[in-house]
Amino acid sequence: MRSKVALHKDFPMKRVFRYATCGMLLLLLFTAIPGCGSINSILRSNDPELIYAKALEFYEAEKWTKASTLLESIGNMYSGTAREDSIAFFNARCKFKSHDYATAGELLDQFRRRYGRSVFIEDAEGMYALCFYHMAPGPTRDQTMTGHARTAIAEFISRYSRSERVETFQKIDSELLQRQYDKAYYNAYTYYKIGRYKSAIVALQNALKAYPESNHREEIMYYVVVAGYRLADNSVSSKQTDRFLSMLDSYYSFIGEFPESEHRKELDRYALAAKDYLAAHQQAENSES
Image (cartoon, rainbow, N blue to C red):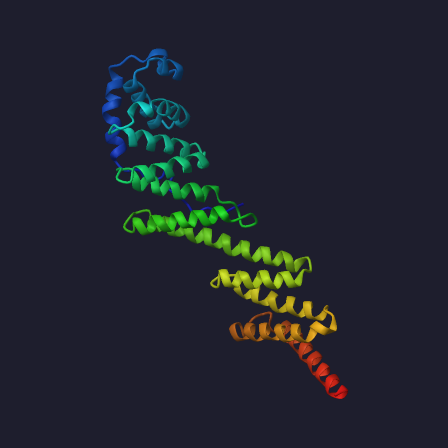
């Protein structure tokens, strides 16, 4: 099961929603709504003010699907008005709260590009990043979405460095980075496990280049040495010398960085075997010359 950074029960909202709904909810107190809240009845009223007011009532009651249906029906009616960004934002948030993160992400992306000066912009940018976070898979699967999430989070923190949400987003980013560490390590280890040592070495070294601070660094460097030894040991004689030399380079890098590692004794044995081979090969060449 994937770990999740503990988030607030609800993504923090500005007080502007309260202000936006106050007047409309008062209107409902004095307005008879056909069908006692039936969506179709409300839509048939053809009264955009009434539809908007009822949409906010459903929104406040966390009936996200109903609220979204009503908001979508009047979006065009309020185009170019002061209410346009509110409707767009509330609808996107309904999708987010319904866990339709793909649709919410698209709507929020449109919102942040179109309403850069809206009072909801910080909330929109924050939820946009969270959409990617919720869609990002565990470390055994492709991490493209994880990368998108980290980019969106970095943009949010950069733009809203004083936001109360920064600390939470930093924790989320650490979780996502760990997934990337894990994915790079697991992917490379898979090659090692099935005996594709040449591919394993390339994948392991790429993992180190991409994530030098990975908490799997010691294990990655360990498998580079072991895979290097096994590749050389199983190679044709014409390639063994170069491959044992390359393996020894990896060995010296490992012990230089992790001299007290629990893998040290095992790798010392591999290094000794590699040196013995190289010495014997050199002696054979000298005898032939």
